[in-house]
Amino acid sequence: MELTKYTKIIVMVATCLAVGYFSSMATMSSVKTWFPTLVKPIFNPPSWVFAPVWSMLYSMMAVAAGLVWNRFEHQKEDVRKALIFFAIQLALNALWSILFFGLRNPFLALIEIVLLWLMIYETYLKFAKIDKIAGYLFIPYIAWVSFAMVLNGSIWWLNR
Image (cartoon, rainbow, N blue to C red; front, side, top):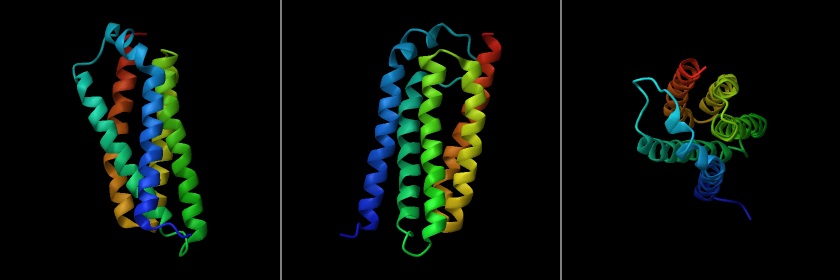
């Protein structure tokens, strides 16, 4: 049975939202107890911003991945490589939460978010070659993780 484009997108949305949910559950206690005690830069967003932003970003990256997956029959090797990069960046995305909130280690998280950003950028390049809309859907994610990298670095610096 061949999956439709919309089924592939739904599978990817469910996967990405599940990754986001489980990584947030693994770090929830630190978000409520440890994080409020940190010194943060003046540009730190209010806590309520993160859940809707991440839900939107996970959904957008999932739609992008579904669009790329839908091109598998036409560009097997390119799609396979792109989806491997996608899976790696998604795993690194979850790992960042564990390092920052779970281990309460902003420095290690800072090193990791640089690797995450590079993987997101590489995924963006691969997606954009396969499907322009998929590439466009990754731009807000790159922008947010760029901001998160600066925020992570600032928090580490202010609390070292």
